[in-house]
Image 1 (cartoon, rainbow, N blue to C red):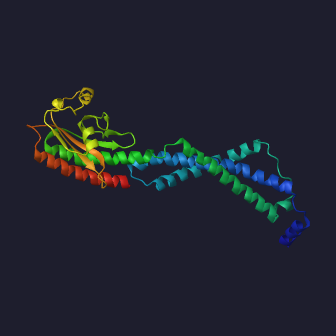
Image 2 (cartoon, one colour):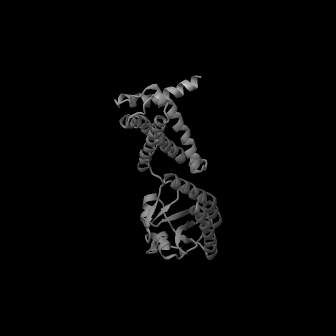
Length: 288
């Protein structure tokens, strides 16, 4: 009986005017613009922070970091939902003049829902502008650097022991900047950067040729500034290119100062074998 009475009330009520429905649409949309903006902003920044920290150290996929960011986003919505509604009310937006019967009409519900949907979509799109404020490639670079550091620890340290030399270095080629940069070593945390073509490592990167130099200070290709910067004296070097499947030099392996005597052709063969292993590892990192 009560449902019939309600139906009778709705049937006897006039349909809301177009201006009233327009007011209802705006009144429904505005709060959800704020909801969508806050939701997406928190999701993006929280997900990015997680991806750049836990994601790198725990090798988490980016999608998992985004899912964890969604937890923070939803929590923020619950905690500050009433605050957003209160702020929207303070804007002084016109309130649709609807009778209880008109509020129960199908057209009223559809317009209100449509306003909320348009509002939240608009807010989410505005929230995506936060992507312009963050470094989207930061986590990928950190993962790649972590992988390269692992390559150095597992391969370069073994090569250092096998060739019986004082130091070993892995220089990675940066094609965009046309320079070499050294992976952090256990000997010296200082980052070394060299233009391609500078020094023996730069020469190897440029020509793709292996080099064995017994007296580096008599070698015109040697770049002594690195010794001055690191307070180290280089006596002899063997250096080899790491090439990808296309034959391009992507890195350079360098061994410095043979502990006993000079480097030999046997050491050079070990170096070339090590370069081929490093090429495989770098190739796998690049595909990831």
